[in-house]
Amino acid sequence: QVQLAESGGGLVQAGGSLRLSCAVSGRTVSISGMNWFRQAPGKEREFVAGINWSGGSTSYANSVRGRFTISRDNAKNTVYLQMSSLKPEDTAVYYCHAEMQTGTRSWGQGTQVTVSS
Image (cartoon, rainbow, N blue to C red; front, side, top):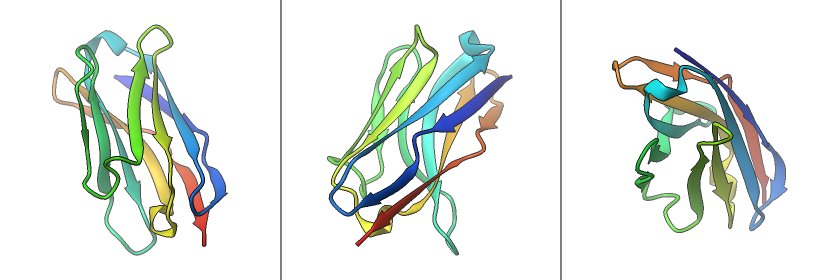
């Protein structure tokens, strides 16, 4: 079991940048992968980006590829989502998500990102 705490959300103008952080605590040795999801008002939660905890391979939703970068600092037990060229449609609550080797999953509380036009 791990605990996740997101930070870094806020209000930004279109074209701007934000960096989200996800601090991970608990049984980090059992993590297989970390992801960012987002949920806009009235929409389903959707995958944004993912990273393998050990090897560092990454994956992205088509809507953010080339604009967002996921990374991790294993020494700090922190996962980041660098978001650039933000668009109003990126407005959502962003959630950190952990996949454990056992198959269990954990979610953070979410952080609000609002992009104004």
